[in-house]
Image 1 (cartoon, rainbow, N blue to C red):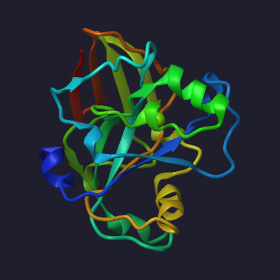
Image 2: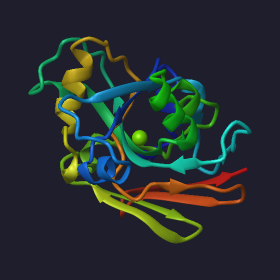
Image 3: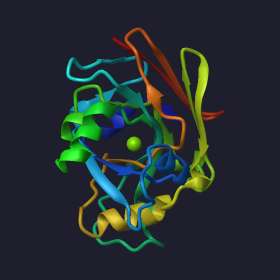
Length: 214
Ligand code: MG
């Protein structure tokens, strides 16, 4: 069963994102492997539905795509153990963590937060809701094509921190509410976007979504 993502998450309070969760992606950006999950958040004003527009912001000249598995919380979770946390998951979606890479690099250099690199309007395009029975979070393919050219093709089996370990880590200190979404990190192959581009993301044979850059 698939339904419009936005119908499901309208009660959600936040998007919690994970950085550097695939060794190959950490390496391509010259980052060390994390010893604990790296977390940041996006506001829900970042959402764009399938078929929508990603707005290229005037403050950046190096806007990047990052395809990610999105985990959608179904039941409130606070200090739930790793072996029980998956009972709080309602489903999944395919998502893009849109990032101003130039601003992020500047933020890293200045040791200031990534807000202006990660949290702008339209910076979290999402596909439809996919029920948890249709996805194996330990073995799910993620694909991103830019203007019909394959750019990212990863698998969640290569995550450094698995979905249940991420959720357990987050809900130890941050309560997860129904409709909250966790973006679980991107595999290798990230790269720049241009105005006029078409981004197509998919979990093959399960769900797909298309977005345009303006
Ligand atoms: Mg990301």
